[in-house]
Length: 526
RNA sequence: GGGGCCGUAGCUCAGUGGUAGAGCAUCUGCCUUUUAAGCAGAGGGUCGUUGGUUCGAUCCCAACCGGCCUCACCA
Image (tube, rainbow, N blue to C red):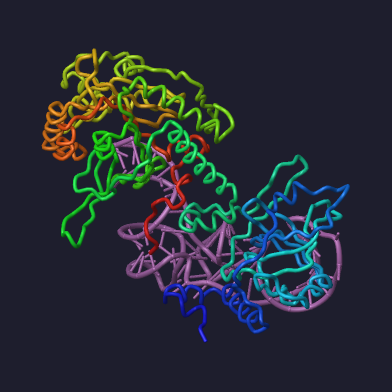
């Protein structure tokens, strides 16, 4: 005979052994088995969700047709020979009323089609909050006015042996929901997201919205005829962004690989290959600090379209983001904290150097590296020897300008030094055709007219190599195969990257990336 | 990595230099339309870990492990 605890590690079984609440539940589990109840059967025929039952109930003409629902028991009130409980399914909660005489009448009957045995009332006494049950019965309204299912039969679908946090709610006279003892410990919520999702159901709504965001984007791009593709996560040379990578090792080849920091260089190889619009939605990995807007792995959309430039791409981004916002929230305006962000196009456009002048009064146009370094110091921005002109401008911008940009704003025309993959500006010397979309003080998107001149690209990479030699760990490394691809000829191309997590944060009004990622990175337990 | 705050029962939290308490949950009894169900009773904790100070530490000190906030770095 196998005992459930045998399948657990020593540590887990020790932990469980220590907890008498768990011991008690194991005892109940054994008791149920002894009485011939299978605590882990194979299925249950469900006819509807809790929310549908509540919506379709008619007091004038209550249906005599029984419904069949299944869910997790979230509250339980036993009253001698009758009990009330609330079960929670994926759409909400509904109250179940069980009367001894009624369910005993069912327990003599045949099993359900899925082989479930109907519980007797004293078997139901071995059921706990957290267990998953199936219920058949007619819908009615109780004396206290709550639409409920009057059970004619109950089956156990899964026995829970670990106690769930108990959260109670009450609606006060003003209709406000008061929550007692919320499950609020962030560490526990992230480490045991499954519990968070069971207990804090509004969390499920955030993730449902996130899924909706991704599918809306995908549909939008598919409808435009762009091809969704997949490119390597394991890369021998990383590139496409300024960041430090994770390193991993391939045993058979006995070489190190990098987890991609961006999809860019592979997607542009596909443009060289003749696809005229490709996109990828996937994970990137950057080996840097973690905070409320940075997770080591995060989701990116990258899109490349032939024969287009960054001006075209700005219009596409306006359309894409506004479309997504409307699909997910029902309108173009969204509340974020105490602010309201309006995605109605067109959005403000300002060049990077103008934005610095507007915010600081400093004109950095045409200045030397030494001069901008001096300006930066004057504004209490730390400068070190590894920083070139581009990095200093970037520091000025992200310190002094970016945090103040709440409404969606395109910052355009970046210094060539900080954009080694972007095409030189058609009319402005020393700049490239690039824009970032800033929203709520954070970068949401980054795009440019892609550099397709292989000679210029080679010299840009060489400049990056010089920065790297100066100590800039984030400078790009030379990718000879990418240069070879460009040498075959890449059409003029517009490229875009959008941070899916950050877009999700804005559209779901969450202030931490951890609240839009199911399993955010946390240090391992013990 | 720096600074601040935090870690006490399954959950949410009080608390004290003399080895701990509440509410909910759990268990026993009563209760066949309750709803933060109720009434009566009961059990449950090496107070994050390891050292130190002390006659004595959960409390004071240090280090460590985790977490949150913040700064730095970045997306």
